[in-house]
Image (tube, rainbow, N blue to C red):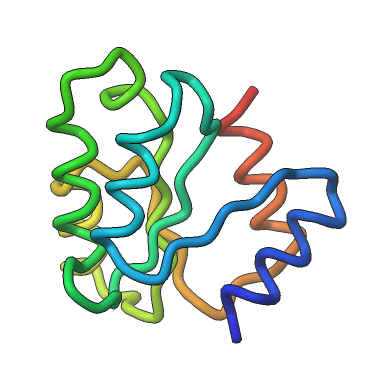
Length: 114
């Protein structure tokens, strides 16, 4: 449900949004895209098959020019300092805890993308 709300919020702001059902699908979509196709990755931590931490590490390890610089933002209910540290150590740029304020979320995205 949170992902649906987030997707609708982003679409209302004019974004093109693509969703993955699990970490493996997220990695494959990124691999199969043209370099620079995605502007940002919003990564759920608790996904089936491959969790968000592992998916971020695999994306960062790809041999493409955009894999090291694309912003990856963890979106998770996990809000402890250890959770934030795990997100950052796996290669993510930011860690947002759910539930989050939609206006703060959009501001953070703008800050990252500009």
